Figure 1 (cartoon, one colour):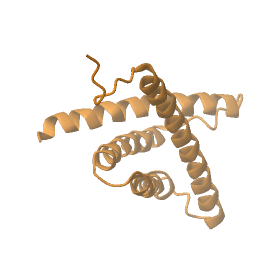
Figure 2 (cartoon, rainbow, N blue to C red):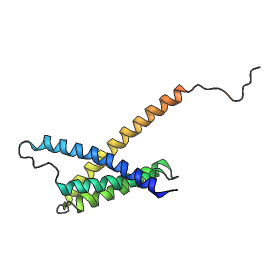
Figure 3 (tube, rainbow, N blue to C red):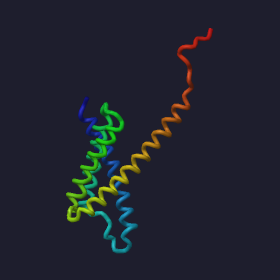
Figure 4 (cartoon, rainbow, N blue to C red):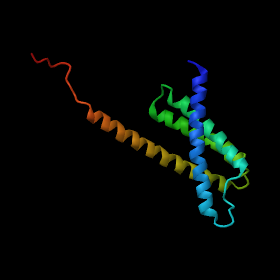
Length: 145
C-alpha cells in the first residue's frame, strides 16, 4: 500500500472538513455576535480547526478501513476524535479553568457527533436500500428450459 495516496486522501478530506467547519463557525459567530463580533473565530482558533480537521480525517482513514465490528469502529472513532477535540480545543484553547465548562463543551461535542453520525447513517441506509431494491433478483438455482 502506497503512502502518498493515503496522505493525499487524508489532506483532501481534511481540507473539506476544514472548509465546512470554518463556514459554520464564521456564520455562527456572525449570527451570535451582533455588532461586537466577539464570537468570530480568531486565527489561533482556525489553526486548531485545521489541525482537528486533518487529524479527524486521519482517524477516519485508519478506523473505517479496518476489519473491526461496526459498533467497535464507532466507539474507537468517537474516543479518538473526542481525544483530538479535547487536546485541540480545550487544552490548546485554555478552557480547563472550570470543570463544568469542560463538561458542557464535551457534551455539546457528543451531541453534535451523534447528530452527524445519525444523519450519515440514515443517508447510507436510504441509498443502500434504494440500490438493493432497484436490482432485480434472479435465482441462480432455477433453470427454465
